[in-house]
Length: 362
Image 1 (cartoon, rainbow, N blue to C red):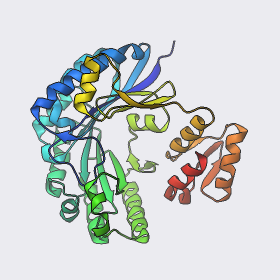
Image 2: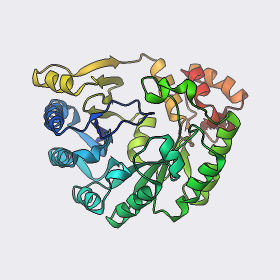
Image 3: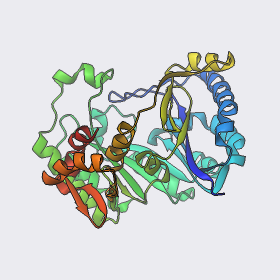
Image 4: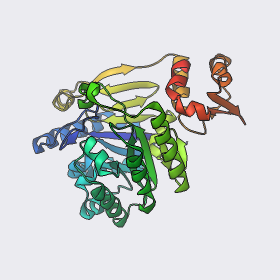
């Protein structure tokens, strides 16, 4: 019997400082909170463990927040989870450059972590100041080299564009620094102003690049990254595909642990409450920590899967129900989608307007 592949996500909400663009659930890094999270994760793991019987865990991801502020907790989690994941499991931990050290990364490697995702965001100090990051460009580059020296052979970094007052010179400088760095993957994001963030409250006072400039930033990044061998495989991802993230785009089932963590299991999406104390208290009282869940009926569920999977450049299998193909046909006629060799995928234009494509599909 072939085991079904699945993934696991752990949310570590601790941060020393919340960035002005961050819309995730994060809280101050008080040591008193660490035990609360450990207790909650342990209880939730025991509760969900029966769901994983007969499953093959092929990726584990520690996100946040700043998971490297919770190294002892990560150690305990991996010890508890260890008997349930495959030997070739991709284990990712997010880290920030300001916390980086050779000792930290060597510790993570010894725990079995084999992929590191560094929140670099920019390699230009002016942009880092705009983002109110507390690391410098030099520190970011040092962190990447420390991770490489610690034995990481799968290093991913994040870069952001469309920043307030960002110039072409600033963006080109960040891109020019990449050629000297031992990275294997890059996630490219344009800044979006989300509600309940500091930037959102100040949005009327911020000056952003024009749409034309934004397109120039994107095209310059694509050319640069592919020239470095970091091939684009998803709208915002370049290089060695992340097993974990590809799972999100292909509807692989996953369980999320921790406050605010999402899960997708047996066609149902659900989310834990975004409050550490309430999350752990619910589990201690043997109650559900979930505060949202939905299961889309057919064909809405298939439409959503298609819209998400189209983020991948190789697209989707064109062998689809006729009612779905009728929905896609106008998008093909508008040159937003291309049908070729039994696949349907975003055109060059469609890659720029995925949100539009997705809204018409869903």
